[in-house]
Structure formats: C-alpha cells, structure tokens
Amino acid sequence: DQQVKQNSPSLSVQEGRISILNCDYTNSMFDYFLWYKKYPAEGPTFLISISSIKDKNEDGRFTVFLNKSAKHLSLHIVPSQPGDSAVYFCAAREGDAGGTSYGKLTFGQGTILTVHP
Amino acid sequence: NAGVTQTPKFQVLKTGQSMTLQCAQDMNHEYMSWYRQDPGMGLRLIHYSVGAGITDQGEVPNGYNVSRSTTEDFPLRLLSAAPSQTSVYFCASSFGGKKQPLHFGNGTRLTVT
Image (cartoon, rainbow over all chains, first blue to last red; front, side):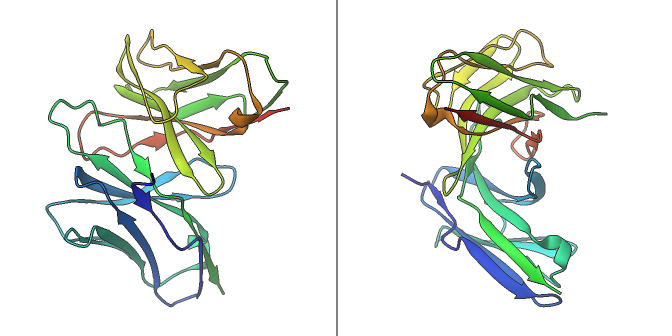
C-alpha cells in the first residue's frame, strides 16, 4: 500500500524550461511534505518543504504547491538547468504531538529528471 | 563537520552471514533512522531512534536489529543475510521538530548472494 506515489518514473525537459514533478498521497494524517534530490552514489539531499497549512512555498528556482483537497503536491523548477538532472523524491511526515514521528518519512518511488542543454 | 558517515560503502555477503552497517553523525541530532532503497519502491523505513536507548520499528524491520547506545552512533545489524536484503541502505539523522529535514549519509550498497 503505497501512501505516497510519484506516478511519473521519468521526465525530460530542455534547459531553461519549467520542470514539474508531481506527487500524490493517500494518508490524511500527513501534515508536512518534503522534496529531496538524489545524485548517483550519493544520499538524498533536502530541497524544499511545505506545511499542510500552506498551499505554496518558494525558494529561489524551486516552488512547491500543495492541494490538500486533492492530496496532491508538485515541485516546479524554473528555469531548469542541466545540474538539476537527478532523482527527485517526494516525502511526507505524519503530524504527531508526541514527537515520535519526526524521524519517520514516507517516500514516493522517485522521478528521474533529465535536463537537456 | 562530516555530517552522517556510513561504512562500508560496498559489501558482498553470502546467504546466512551476519554483518553490521555502521552509521555515525556529528551534528548532535536526536533522531536517527535507517532506510533501504529498492528499484521502484522509493526509500522504506527499517528502524528509527528518537534518542539514545530508544528505538522502534519502521515499515520493513524483519531481519534487522538496531541499538542506540550513544547519540552519535546507530548501527544496523543483519543477523542472517538473505538475497531479499540486497539493497542500498541509507542512514539519516535530524533534530527534533516537525519542520526539521532528515540529513542522509551516502549509503551502503549491499549484495547478498
């Protein structure tokens, strides 16, 4: 039972254009969402996050949008650069007043982004 | 500041052998966790710890043991390796707090033959 799904295994875009990576979730208890980027032979690195009380968060070229009613989030990269080529993982965390969930993320399958010069 | 350090980077085991994957962090993070990455599955949580002496199971704990005797170290033990445990293993750590991201090590690629 995949609670976080990234239905596009791969995405190819031209340098300078917009990249849009999508993610859907099913667990209504998720209240914080993160995007990670992963290069080959390295660990995932944190990119950007959003709380469930917001619908948009922006950091430079990266913007994450959250649609709670649709249980959908997306990552926009504008403009895309060849160095953005990597695997992108969407992840989610349950709300937990006791704090035991802080170390626990549920990940999607990942989307391979290729940005062509 | 090394961050999260995992050793070894690569390991080949025969079925039934045991081994320990090491993980150390130097950021004084309370939370540490182990994930495995398999093709088409994303990263799945094996075990996690909210502080020294406290551990709990994640989504796929069978076949793995952990302990957390210090804040810095969180080793993952495979008691009797099986081919199904062939995977890439990532250790992660973070401060407490909902908005704190996990910081990952560079992984251990394990093959069980």
